[in-house]
Image (cartoon, rainbow, N blue to C red; front, side):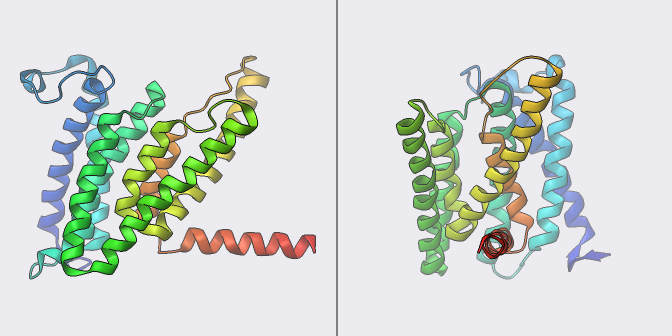
Length: 255
């Protein structure tokens, strides 16, 4: 039986790999915020406190892995043609990890950002072997990610006198820009801002009117990570085209 020209056995295999990777990511989710070594003998011991969380990570990663295989398929004759699949199999668990850590601790660790960046540079180099223009686009994506969030951080500091965006978010966007290229990193930014704005309004309403308390800081990293995962599966330029169409409609209404 085949799905999208891929034998069903591959889906079973990649789902199993997803379970293993999910288990490892759950371990990283505990160790990284505590600044402890990841590769240690303790990894092979059962972590009773994190058992439920482990299952959540395992299931999420397995599902995403199956979806990635369905989207990109497998090219048996040319390994380089599987680079899109390979890079996102590597990236998505780290995006999930970034989402979880920033949600819980409000920080995107340098260890994680540097790992994403280093692997991205290696993958970009491999792309450059067969397609220099594609590699250039990924490098440009890295600089665009840095530019967008550096400008936002600088303007926020000038206007409000405090950080509008954490440096961890800037480093994170620099790193993942290597995986998505120029256009998609802009789409990720747009989608993240829109989702964050809607979520923030709802959350502020709940906190102020229902819970009767205020908290003016909402971590932005989870929205970036979530938007990056979503943009992997969306058609190319869909977010950007939708945003431009929306702006056009608004401008026509005003004029």
